[in-house]
Image (cartoon, rainbow over the protein chains, first blue to last red):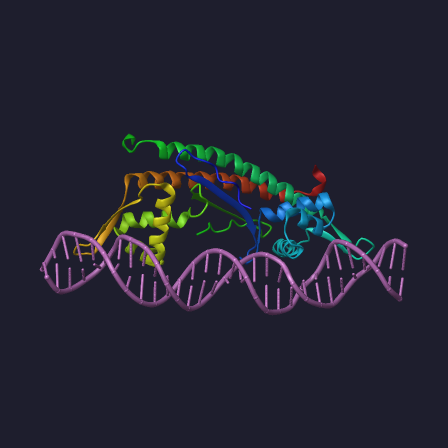
Length: 130
Length: 130
DNA sequence: TTTCGATATGCGCAACTAAACATATCGGTG
DNA sequence: CACCGATATGTTTAGTTGCGCATATCGAAA
């Protein structure tokens, strides 16, 4: 889930995480959920996406359900029944959200890169220079 | 511990968290620990800092201990005994670390501010404009 | 109208985390 | 040299979260 820690000269690593939440406080949308959304695009079903992500269907379904509750709108067009059991696809709103989130994450990654470099320099400096 | 979520027009909030870790993976240094460090400067003892932070001495001590283990150097000059039982103060290295961390956090705050504004604009846009 | 595989959901148990409790040690100071 | 209050640490209990087992539902196609 979390980003792999960034190595520093002092054996200290910086970790960070971003996620979305609703106003009630319970429930959250984290990277794992967006990962699922991407896999649903590829595979066409929530089940296949869950398998691909190495998580149980129960868990994947819960994450999507929770996210939809927070957002107040559907992320998936879900279809049950039929020869192949059913399928799911992203709603247009889900597509937009996914894109926006990935862009947000990218900006975050970039700024972290810079901030962490500064941080490493700071703790490297001797104490007598300020 | 975590930052209070940032409100968005769509009732979705952005949350984020940063923390430090060592190379073994077990143990971490989070905002709470830096908060303790600041209170130790104010109060002069770990106990008073723990009380101020509303946590047990046991917990506070554990956090400091863990942080020192990760970093490989002492955060506190600890003194036992004496009339008033003892006291603790930050080491110079701890001061530097604390300052660097707070600066890092500030940079995060700023970049998140900007990134989240962009995010909100993105999910507001209609789907037919790209 | 039976079948099949994906969606849908309740619920109990396990794993982990966090808090609470208990207890020992230290050493200036009166 | 006894006292006091903070540092130091193991043990134990409590609480939370999540995982996955079990089971039901759906509907196009054969």
